Amino acid sequence: MMRQVQALLFDLDGTLVDSAPDMAVAVDRMLVDVGLAAAGEDRVRGWVGNGARRLVMRALTGRVDGEPPEADVDHALALFLRYYEERLSVRSRLYPGTRSGLDRLRADGYGLACVTNKPERLARQLLSDLGLDDLLPVVVGGDTLTVRKPDPAPLHHAMAALAVPAEQTLMVGDSRADVEAGRNAGTGVVCVPYGYSQGEDVNALAPDVVVASIEELHGFLRGAA
Ligand SMILES: O=C(O)COP(=O)(O)O
Ligand SMILES: [Mg+2]
Image (cartoon, rainbow, N blue to C red; front, side):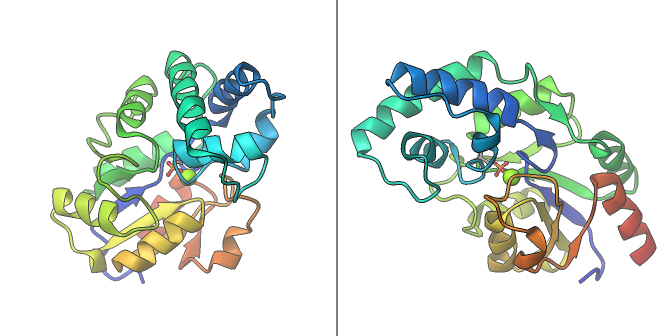
């Protein structure tokens, strides 16, 4: 798997950034507005990973596979996005080892990109607020193309921007959508165990390797080089 890695594609929420605290505030404000009970941060953590629309669908139904009426989703999504944008990076934090790991990976010359299911505009703003925009200038969001992870197209888009083929790229993520997107695109797949994986153990998703942090990923690639 570690054949000549030249580029790394990073998931954002749950991999680089613990963004659930701010997302939970926005979800709860939305839920109260539409007459439902606030869900709280722990439940919201279990709903993040497949884009803002899916997050809202889960919040409205309390179910990971919930399918509320389209008009309800449209209304709630607009509220969620407005509230989330107002407080995008108040409590969101980089996971330990993210900054140092990305710095070292860049110093070693790897191509780095962010491939997230978050709306691109919010992803760019969050990366900028947390000081990662220089390290990750290539950002593909959930609405950059017409499809999102687990579709391989966002990964292909990022790899084209980095000019690195899939055989020399690793997708680094925290959930099933990332693992499947990597497999579909033909990249290697790395998981972190601390993110949002809708209650699934990332080991059960059979990534090529699980690393405890982005800094550990750097050490792992050094060792494999
Ligand atoms: O916003 C989401 O649903 C998840 O975003 P992610 O792909 O960065 O985990
Ligand atoms: Mg994620």
